[in-house]
Image (tube, rainbow, N blue to C red; front, side, top):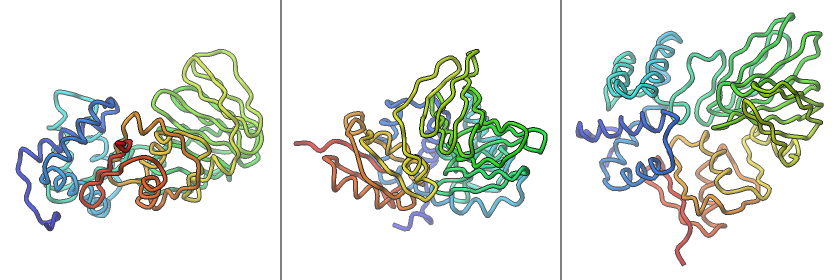
Length: 328
């Protein structure tokens, strides 16, 4: 079947819109994600509708003319994800702003599908970005990441909204501060990494030390080179030490796993996958070690299925993938 040319029933369109909003709201739990996987696998028309969305992701970036138009669409979609009563109306309105219909161009990239157009710096699915700042520092953003910058020779502040970044800090008299909603990290050395997670932020001192101050705590903690910590507004927990090459391998499109859970590996892979990856809790608990490609996410999924006791199921064109333990 030629999916790009297929027509889709309004009820299926509405269901796809509903799932898009639910998965983009930031509030979907494991049960809802599993329900989405069941809906996707239940009918070929469901998979076709979802594939149209994914195909349009690629097409839509070139169809919205100007950054202002893209920002308007992105902001409307973001509001749709936050407000229950007007979700579908806002979402359809955003699509109209882009001059589209269901079978046309959908602007749906980001986390998990929506780009953060209002951020100063942002990257899309499977795309990293390298940005030079006014003070000579350089930021590398991972896929599906966004940040705001306020950098001059007098003050240097970067706020990570989502995803992760690696900062190479230029020497200057003013401090270089990386912020998230959970606190502030001050560079005492030349390189540091920051990653936003669902309920906290991870900081890593890559080259030189960093100072971490949770937003709601009075005391700061200095991380020595190679040390990492997870923190939220009121707590800070040290993490096992990470070699810089392992932690920043994503900059080269690679993922280096050393006895980590398959669930964590899949979480790192999702920003590089235009489709949706579902994994059961049993499979997510498996331990994994090895070098995997982020840029070729399909090859990585196949490699995992060949080397681990898991079953990989995929929908048309790979727009949905499910990972579960093999049944003995």
